Length: 188
Image (cartoon, rainbow, N blue to C red):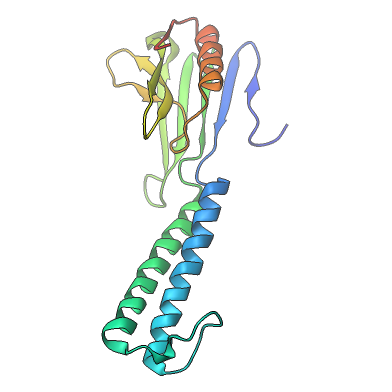
């Protein structure tokens, strides 16, 4: 069994949640790194009067205002790329949802940014769970997500942030969890 696999027996249901280590984030980080480095080298070429790029010759640009603007955009792009790479390295948002009839608890665990509260862990008794709720928002920015509706607290999100989950997969996961917990499924 792999680390990212889900496990289920009659007493424990565990679902792994993918964090920042997705193909789309890698592609975005690579593109931002290349773009930021290109702009930075173009600005530096303008300042030094030496061509540092092989695709064009920005050494002929006037440093003020063109070269300094390119350099600024390059530094900003490299800072954003650094943030993206660190987010991927730390795997922000990864974790798992575990529902255990042995202990009578639901445990929602996610990884955040390094620091005192890097690991966020929510634990609630299974008997306080009222239902599994689906929220579906269509349109330009669609959102498909599952929530636990718990007594005396806000709804707890169960699905990953980012790319919307296909409706069939969301419905299957929601039905499986509702059946395991013995609670109704809302929102479909």
